[in-house]
Length: 533
Image (cartoon, rainbow, N blue to C red; front, side, top):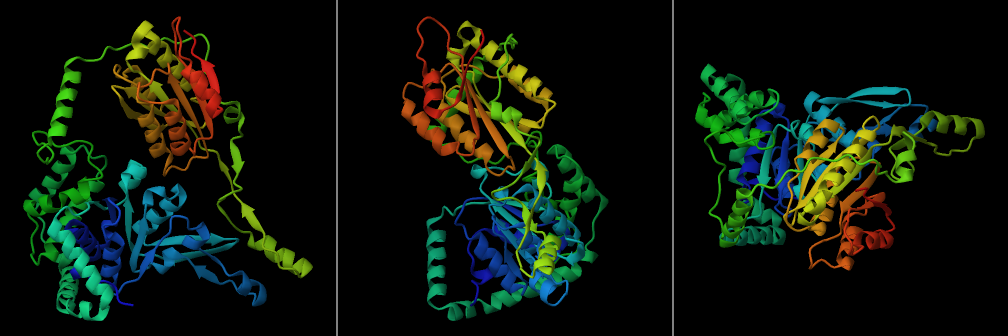
């Protein structure tokens, strides 16, 4: 079956160019595509692999370790007494493309193996006394939607280039995409023949660029410019400096020129810096489109907020500590995975059982791994928490809990509720000092949007390899007037399904009390605690 012609694909020019540059210089380290679904990413990659006559492997998120890396053929081992390695997806992608959709949901172990293999061109398969070095040189391409969870910065940095993939907004472009797709589906051969000339021209252009790559000239002032860009964008390490130079060289070779200029670096700098930069360069604003009337109104409201800086309230450490759920605290530091465990066949025990009993029974091994625990704090710092300085006791209680568990394997995350918004201040860190610093500088005021916080919690639970999670909500329960209790319960049940334990800390004070936190605890079967004030 023919693939859709690469040169017939409309739009996504940045993604196309980034992929082509990786073919010209395979040491660039792959492409991370961030953005919308349904924009033809898989079609584009398949088309390019077909054009270059290279293997294409689509790695499913749920693939097992044996499926990805390979395994021993038990039938050959037992019947023929031969050790035969069954190749995995990594080996099958050798000299081709390895694509992972929703790569942010891939578990950390496989992610590390993929990135190492992509960088070194090989990997080691070790199974029950058998150790093999397998070639695996491929162009790694990952795509993700940041709304479903982000990649850790250190993993993003391992991708050479990154592009934003957006849904086309031009009416003419969308219509042309649909027309091309329908024409291809109706008669693939006839449609593809119409692009044969363009396909051959692009193929020849890429091969020529590969041959010219080593001869591209590079002046010292261009190298200095690359390093200056990295400094201006506050990029960590020097990987970006090297990649700016390499990517510019590949770009010049593709453009059929012989010398890299600063303009060439400018043309490709977003590929390298998009997922690495920590700030925009001085005296340079990021590109912006004119704001809509709604955005202007929101911007004016934000300006009014900033003109009246929120009051800062120092933490007051309470005498009594908040406590985590008992089962969370007492869970052992080691856990044997039962469901979805990272397991493989215990070949020696399986063969031993067969030789002893003449009965083949596959025996699996379980890997004992450290439990990764996370506590997510949702801390209400809205206007109602300011009354009586309740927020100071709430901050102090969280601080005391964090300090109490700092020597354990617990990682902390923090979501703040203020001005009818939910803001992630800390995400999965064991850095106690950093977390406490964020707590001490919480913004305060406005209404409490608990629904927004529960949505943010879901984002934090996706894509991270955590074995156990506790959610701690600290609030007086004075949520937005339009937020019904049933809406909160439904939102929690939908967004927080991966939460193992729930603790609700009631910070309500005064003579007249609504008792919402107590009611929530009863309905959600959470661990209810009263804030000591």
